[in-house]
Image 1 (cartoon, one colour):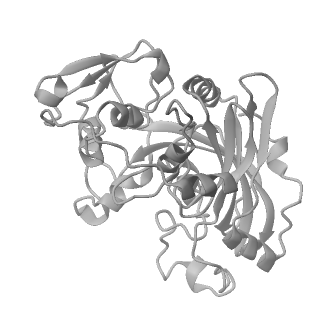
Image 2: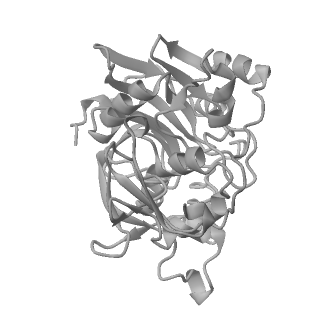
Length: 353
C-alpha cells in the first residue's frame, strides 16, 4: 500500500466515475494533508492511466490511479465530524430548484465550495447534514470560487453526479456569468481566446523573486506549447455601461479553466471590480489616477462576479434552467448605476462557440 511506503495502483470504480482527483484522494486517504496532495500532483508523482494529472482531473470508470508512497503509516482513517443540523437549514435556505435527483443552490458570497488550507466551513462539508438513512450524501457537480456567488449544481446520487458531470464536460451545459468590470471592452460583443497556465512561469515571479503562494494560484496568459498551457475560450457581451468607468458584462465560458473569467477580464484590460488577484493596477495607472475614469466611491470592495444562470439537460429528460438573484453587494452597485437586472441579456444571441 502506498501509505506504507510502496507505490500502488488503484482502479477507478463505477461509483467513482466523474469524481475529481482531489475528492477521490479524500475518499481513499482522508488523513492525507491537502498541501501534500497538491505537492505530489504538481510533481507528477500521481498518474491517471499513466498520464500526468491535475487536482481537478475528472476520473472515468476503468482508469487507474498511480499513488506514490504517502508516508501515512498505518494510521486509521479520520472520522468525519458529526453533521451540524444548522448546516441543513442553511443549505435549504439556498435552494433555487430541487427534485428527487438534484438541487441547484444559490451560493452566497464568501462561502467556499470545498475545503482547503485554513477553510473549515464549506458547501462540500455542509452537505453531510443532508445525508440519507444509508449515509449517502449529496455531492458537488462543479465548483465556484469562494467569492463568486450564484448557481451551484448538486447531485443526490453518484450516478446522477456522473451524468451531470458528463454534460459539463461535453459542453452541453450553458453557464452565464455577470460581472462589473473596470473600463468598457471593445468591441461590445466578442470572444476571448487565450492559453492559460498557473503561476508566473518557471518558478519566478515579477522582478525575478521566487514565486509566492499568491502568484502560484494566479492564472497567467501563456503561449501555445508552453508547459501546462491550456486553451480557454469565453464569449462576452456588454449589457450596459457607465462609460468610460465601468461596464456590466455577461459572459459565457465555453471552457472551464481555473479563474478563467477573472484572468480573461484582466487580459483585455477590464479587470473585475473587487478582484484581489486579478485587479492590481498601480496607483499611477490612468484608469486609477483619472477621476473621470476611476470607479466611483461607494462601490463595495468585493468581487463583482456571479454565476447568473445555468441551463443543461436533465438526466431524466427535459431541461434544467435556473437563474440566481444578484448578491447584495452587486445589487447595491446595480442600483447605484441604474442598471436593470431584468434587461434582456445579449449573450443569449451569442453562438455556442
